[in-house]
Image (cartoon, rainbow, N blue to C red; front, side, top):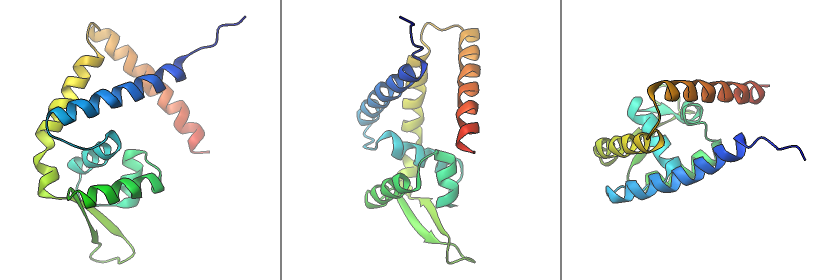
Length: 146
């Protein structure tokens, strides 16, 4: 019997387990958001007040998933929707002060997760591993764009 490669399976398993641990660590810091919601807020920390279409690109979330997560974040008081000043068809997403205030804690949890992921890895191993991940991502993006 030919042994099947397990890269995709392992990546999925790491993604799910990492997400659970990340959520648990966020709760320890008093942050009650899921990983998908965190991706949205993280993107807005880098550039606030962007259109939903741009946010979808930056988070790699589908529009229906993104809309659902945005609704929850608005209900939680972490985001607001605003009309674009010159184009009423465009809705901008902005952080509230509450979301801005949790950035330091969120970044601390992110650092803890990075440390956990890479414990006992050498610097060269990390560089090689991340180069492989970038190649895998590029392979998938090539297919997704077709």
